[in-house]
Image 1 (cartoon, rainbow, N blue to C red):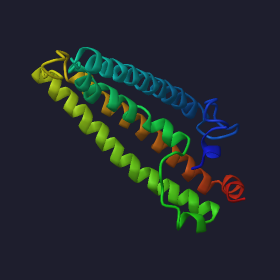
Image 2 (spheres, one colour):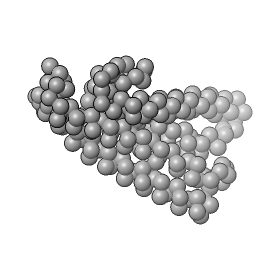
Image 3 (cartoon, rainbow, N blue to C red):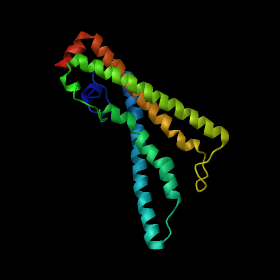
Image 4 (tube, rainbow, N blue to C red):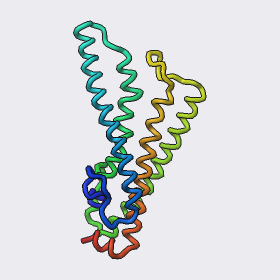
Length: 192
């Protein structure tokens, strides 16, 4: 699905008028933009921590070891996993388009639906496994590190949240593509 198939303007977050499933698309879009906002804040925090780390290292010859642990446990997973669903919404993921370019509108919808369903299955499995790890770490009382005495589950929860949001977006995309296949007016308009 291209950006025009998902939103009028991805930044506006409004589904295209007359689209089936516009309500779930709107709510999921809001959740995706919230997660993206958190990922952006994580990036700003990372930039600030780099400045602190460099300053501490060169000015005081004493780097802050906790910064590496915080980056590994929280900042990088926040930036990667919380942005996944939004990137899918704006069609920003990489795809091989050699055969895709040759396909008609209906064939593209069929390819998109199959790929979305397969991808959704993978990311749903990642979300499920991630959630199992969260529960396991919580039950044993694991901590992030010796420097950061926080429950490991607070860091691990990032993966199932991001993978779950992406799974929902992929499911919605697959349903929309299937509807475009079975609705001649939508499929005909898409192939034009």
